[in-house]
Structure formats: C-alpha cells, structure tokens
Image (cartoon, rainbow, N blue to C red; front, side, top):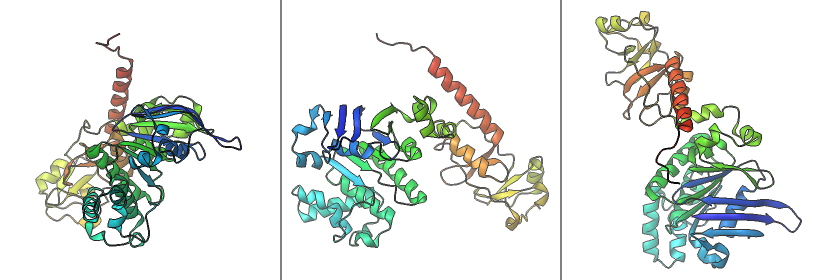
Length: 379
C-alpha cells in the first residue's frame, strides 16, 4: 500500500502545488487522480517516486518512508508511463522495452526475450520489434511505453496522462488493454488524468483534486457519481453524471424480445407472426443483424437488404451496462436496441421504455441497499 500523510509541496516562490494531501492507495488497484489543470495531480504522482521531493509530510510504500530509500532503487521498483510514451528514438522497439532489464543486469538475449513477451501482453505484433518509434502510430507507441514500464515487473505503476495524446478510438482501446493487463497482473497503479470519463472507467478509487492541490473527494467511482461531496465535485462531474452512473448497472437483466427478429429468408408465416411490430430486425442466415425494416416492405423469401435502415451499435447483455444499452437505443433509428452474443448473433431487441423501467428498478434497488441496516457487523 502507498500511504500519503499530510503531504505538501511548496516551491521557493511560495506557490503551493499540493496542500496537506492524505491518501491511502490500496494494493492491486487502479487509483486515479483527476481534477482541473494546475491542481497538483502530476506533482503528487512525481512525489511518489521522488522526481519531486515533498516539502512536508510523509509518503510510505509498504510502511517504509520513500525518502529513506536510495532514489535509484525506489524508481526501479516503479514503472513510469508518460504522455507521448517518452521512448528513445534511436533505439528499436525491442531495445526500448529491454532498457530496464539490461540496467538490472540481464543479458541482451534475456532482456529481448522479456521484451518480446511484453509486446504480446500489451497487444503489439512482435513483427514490430525491429522498428523505431517514429515508424509506429501514437497508440502503438503508448503500448510500447506500457510494456517498457512493466519490463522489470515492478509492483507499482505510475501513469501520467498516458492516453491523452491519441484519438478517442485508440484511447478506448488502450484503456481496455490496461484493464485487461491489470486483471492479469494486479499491479498497484496510480493514474493521472483530466478526463472524468477515463477516471470513472479505470479507477478502483478516484481522488478528485481542486485548485491549490487540495483533496475534494476520494471514493469509488459509483459513490462519487451518486454522492458528490460538494458543489465543486458535482460541477466537475458534469450535468450527465446520472448517465455515467448507469455504467455500474449491468444490462444482463433486460427483458429481450425476439418477436420483431426475422431472418433474411423468412417465410410468409414467420413474417406474419412478426407483423404487429412497427419495425422488424432482419438478420442474415447466421443470425447476425442486417438492419431494420417496416413489415410492409418485406416480401417472403425476397427481403431487399438495400432498403434496410441501419441497426446502429449493438450491445452484449453479459458484458455491457445499462448505459451501453441506453446509448444503443438512443442511436437506433427505431428506438430499439439490438442485443447480440459474443459472436455477434442477435439475442433479441429491447425498447427505450423497457430500458427506462430497468433503470428505475436498478436505482430503487441501489437506494434500498444503501439504506438497509448492516447485519453481522462486529463492533
């Protein structure tokens, strides 16, 4: 565990970057520091590995004061990932990743073998090993940065806005990759971002910091969204925090219907059974969605797929949230969301009204759980 007790960073000109910050960062979790520019997020991160020395207070790593450890030893026990990866431009990808193992005394062959393993772990094709950073995309370079930080298998990983310089699609992929890696390796990760959506998605715990380097609230993401500590936190979370909160309610309980679902080679009897629905979802012969149509536009055995409306983005009930299902319904031209399995085959469809009812039920259940008395507690 990393523990910060009343940590302050004050510069010679009197500027206070971090003001009496106290945090307990749990092991094998992702703790996210989030807040507006200039609130001390990066300074806090850098005090953990002593790139910045605190003016007051103590930082303990597994109960030991970090200031009592040699700086080189401390930093080698922590991986460090920054924006734009910070790669050595004159070194190949494999040698970038192998840097720390070589510094720790491993042979070139051992270090490169370790680098190849890590390339696969972070989702990089090993065929890229002999290329140089400038030959890779921004997302690929960030994956190299993560692999390099993991090369010595450090228990702690510090990440300073590592995904902020890439486009939204690549950023989502990198976030998903980080969650996958964390699920496998269980590192203690401290992650800095200014993006509240990223903080909510990645964080086991989220520390919201305000200007002046003071802590505004420290809580799990779901608690942060349901009970912001004050007006500043509420304003920082944004007007759509209720929608974000739906990310913590699973879509698995939604009642799906297959009545409007018809295959592209549907018979007249099958079309007739579905005709009461205002729209029909047409699938291919393997059960994958093709698009929406009105019943009157369909002819048995000759469904014109060129006339279909797009079905939008589907969701997977077993893995996606109510937020994802609602988003799919809102984006659908019919107002119905399409549910698919892991292979992309249609499980059924669900209306916006049914999703709305599920949301009301989920909120009611959550409120009841919060107000219920705790039993079996030990005083």
